[in-house]
Image 1 (tube, helix red, strand yellow):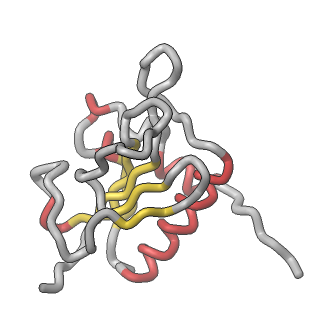
Image 2 (cartoon, rainbow, N blue to C red; image 1 turned 180 degrees about the vertical axis):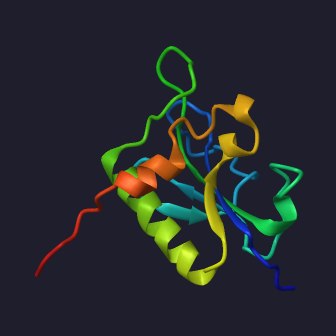
Length: 131
């Protein structure tokens, strides 16, 4: 079953230091702190995360999102940030009509992913390895 993807939604897992047994069932992809990208579900599967748009969305999260005091916020590592950016580029190529948005743009009270996605994408300068 092929789905028409309208949204690529960025989240955090809202966790402290991720553990090996971490449950990532609410996302299609998770970017670990070391930059490894784990596919949790195939894109064709509908994940229940944001009810109003789930049937049209791919959900990607970075592992983390809670600081040492337990508050939600941006806890991405530099390699995690680079991997997230690269995965978003790949997903936007795969789904060219999809809009990349943060979870908080659908549910303002969510404070997820902990940073303004559109502003970050506009200003982010990826590391480019020149040979």
